[in-house]
Amino acid sequence: MERLIAMRDLVQEDVRDRGLRADPVSNLISAYPDDFRLACQSIAETKDPSIAVVTGFFISDAQPPAGETDGPLGALFLARALSPLGIRVTLVTDGFCYQALKAGVEACALKNVAMVRLPSFEDSSRLAPESYWQTFSESAGRVTHLIAIERPGPSHTLESVLGQPGATDDTREEFIREVLSRHHDRCQTMRGRDVTHLMSPAHYLFEMAPRQNPKVVTLGVGDGGNEIGMGKIRWEIIRRNVAGGAQIACRVPVDHLIVCGISNWGAYALGAGIRLLLGHAPAEDLFDPNRERDLLRIMVEGGPLVDGVLAVPSITVDGLSFERYAEPLERLRELAGLTHNDGEY
Image 1 (cartoon, rainbow, N blue to C red):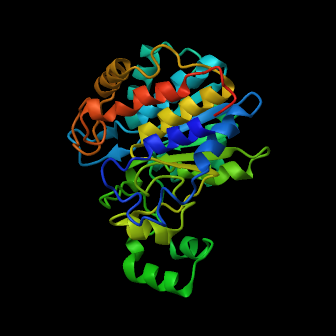
Image 2: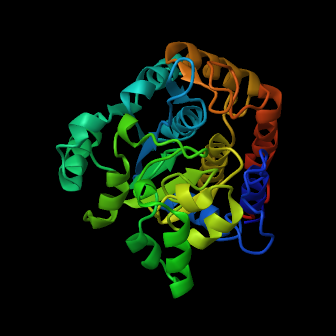
Image 3: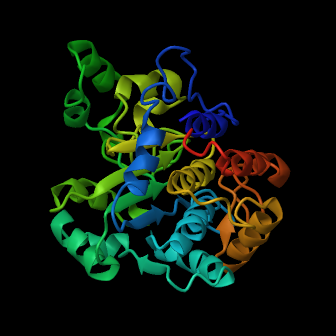
């Protein structure tokens, strides 16, 4: 348990001061402190788990416009960490990220990892959520867990805000006053740029997953408040902590939410935690910064992918130098290493 807590705390550093814990008491980090452990346990304790990882965030103002490096690299890490253990992994993304992920999968020779290309926004406009799920299911097959990593989700509407536990008349007044109707139910960047029409509505999958029989468990990994899963946190909390949070806060919840400083970090910790619980020591190259840099370069060149902050193709994530970005990897390797006292997590 202690090592899982240490993993969680390590990746929850608000490295870019986005306001994940601006309010020292009630914030995005403190909202669901047990969810990281529960997410790891949910997968580790499921018989014959099969996970689908949805990623890809389109940066429309980049040169060239492309998917960002945060998300796909973490999704590939989960595939590298879990597929050798016999866990079925399917990577799910839009056309703009598909080639980058494919290049990463091929570079790692992950022959048992499947890939699913989501329908475009235009094609999806003709599909009801039920049909969207069916189309996905026909490609992905059996899924026990659905994971979103750095995947934008639609913002709140008045109905969704008032449907959250603890909503009051003050909540209603604040939402009506601060969020214009044209910003309701829209996928947005941290700066409030609307990318709804540029991406497949993957949130349909997370809305349909609880309706399946058996129910598909949902996980969300995000670092800004606008990603799928953040709807689990009350709108007022994101509004109070994140600049522009009132407008961009995602309304789509998940069963287990992992809030982290960089979304890829959350994926690294999730993979490490699951392997720890299953009794598997870190593979030789899993937490190797040099290997991670090589894979990022392959994906940037094969995509292209762009740094979401710098808005250009770069072997970086969220504007950090690669050295700073990769700092948690070595510590995660240490935390994930098995010891003689391997019952104490």
